Length: 283
Image 1 (spheres, rainbow, N blue to C red):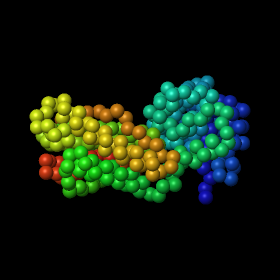
Image 2 (cartoon, rainbow, N blue to C red):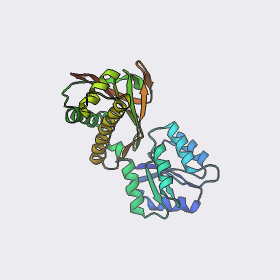
Image 3 (cartoon, rainbow, N blue to C red):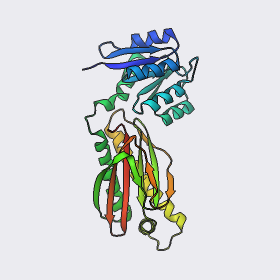
C-alpha cells in the first residue's frame, strides 16, 4: 500500500523533528517541510500531499489563514492543526474553513498517526462516494415526506451539470462543512410550500412566516438525518450543516461549478418538491 504523504508546516525545527520521528516511516512519507505559511502554500501546490500538519503561530501568517489559502487552491485538502493552542473558538474557526483535525502539542505518536489515518479515510472509499452519500439524503427525503406530511411520491434523480440549480419559488439552502464541503437545497413553489406546511402542521390557514418556518424545519430534519447516518457509517467522516439561507424568487439560479450535484425530484399529490445535493471534489 502506498504511504501517506505528509507536508509539515511549522516554523520550529524542533517540532519538525518531533513530527518526523513520530510518524512511522513504513506508513508515512514526509514529502516536504515548510517554515512559513507562504512556503507551505507554495509546497502544497507543487507537492499535492495527502495531508498537511499545520502550526498556528508562524512568522508571516496565522496557520488558519494559510489553511484557507490552501483550501481555496484545493477544496479537498486535508489539514490537521498541530499547535500548542487549542480552544473552542479556534476549533470552530478551523472547521468553518474545512480543517479536518486539531491536536495540541505535545501529541502522542499513536494519536497523531490515528488522526492522520482518519482524515485520509475518505481516500480509501471507492469511486462514486458522492453517489453513496446521496443515497442517505434520498432515503431521508422520502422517509420524512411520508412520516411528517403523509405523502407518498414518485422520485426521480438526475445529475446536475455545473452545480446549477433553478428555484421554483422558495429555496432552503444548507452548506455542508467538515470532512467534505457541499450543499443541500430543498425547493418548492410557494403554492406547494403552503399545502405542504398545512399537512405537517395540520392547520388549514397559515401565514407566510408559518410556511417559511415549516419548510425550513422539514429541510433541517432531512439534512440532519442524512448527515447523522453518513457520520455513523464512515469512520473519520464528520459532516455538519451551516445555518440555512432562505431564498425567494421563481427562476432564481444558484450555481457552484465546483460541486458534483444531483437533483432528486418528488412528485406528490400536492405538487413537486425538489432536493439538490452536491459535494466538492466531483469531476
